[in-house]
Length: 134
Image (cartoon, rainbow, N blue to C red; front, side, top):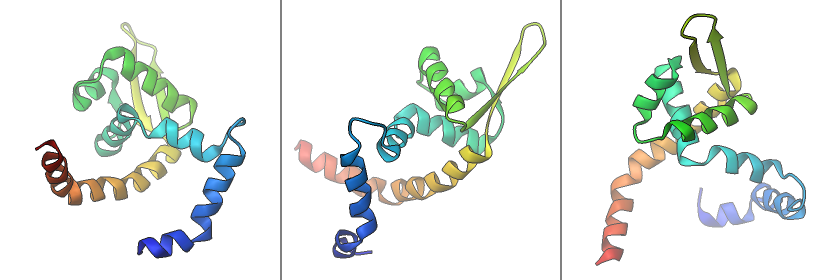
């Protein structure tokens, strides 16, 4: 799709009209995009989508440099939005597992396009960044 086609696509324009008209209220597009577009949310969804059900420390290890507090907040938000299911097992010590819900899986399926795009264009973007630093 060319940029000219995007500009003339009324659907894109309608999204921004809706977002701008509901700034004082909750705009689904702004609210949801803000929630799912942060680094830790994307990585948590990506890890759960790629590896399946995981315990907290396993997920933390897969993601890497996320703090325990940040991962906890991220998982709570994902659970509150219905994207992640948290299951507590009545054991001592308690065992907790996280997995994507069907809604989370549908988001992961959409994220795949962005992930593929990033993989395909990563080198070019890095070259642009490096050229701007010189």
